[in-house]
Length: 192
Length: 87
Image 1 (cartoon, each protein chain N blue to C red):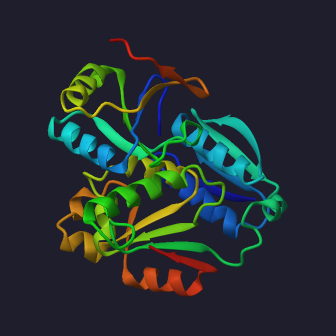
Image 2: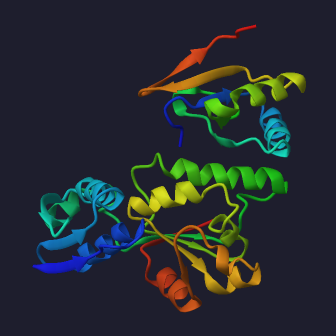
Image 3: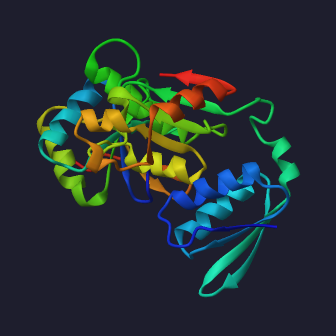
């Protein structure tokens, strides 16, 4: 059995780590996690993907045994080969008036929450990083997507350019190596 | 996205939603433009969400600017209840 300790991690890292571990796990996965949001989010995420979750108390926290990897095949999107990567290169959706574009992008991201099939990874570059930094209206939404297993990553150079390095508020920072690799290895890329 | 007890104001044009958003944000009121929940089919697909604590200020500002929404709903359990005009 593989072990993973996500105690002390802030949301959505527990879900992100569990997702990565499940993708590479051979057999069952045992996860140590804190009570509260991590416990609820990881359970919802794993059960949503067809796994069974067995829970037991562990040193003031909890231990989940996540099993049943074969069920993955029945998931929506299981027919896809490789990850779905969404590349968000702007804070606006479509060409046209700025104000309308920003409104559409915000609404697009919020609407993702209602979708059963989500991207595996969302990469924010150029003005796209304004969506993941403080002041963005979709921080709460991106956190919720993170808790459903979507990996939210922003381009470090871009954050730096806009002086937003210290104010990243959703997801993690990435670099061009990871961005290029993600795009080249993806099963499908959705570019906005 | 919409919590229990939140209000969702549906407008009949995207221009009115955007104007209302601008007006309310200028007044530093805590509102958010959201996709209109599917069950509240709106022509433009957009709505403005706000909580009870700013309801009075939001609606007073909209009324004053002639930007009253076409319909107003409150999130209740799984669905929405329609708020009828009280004036």
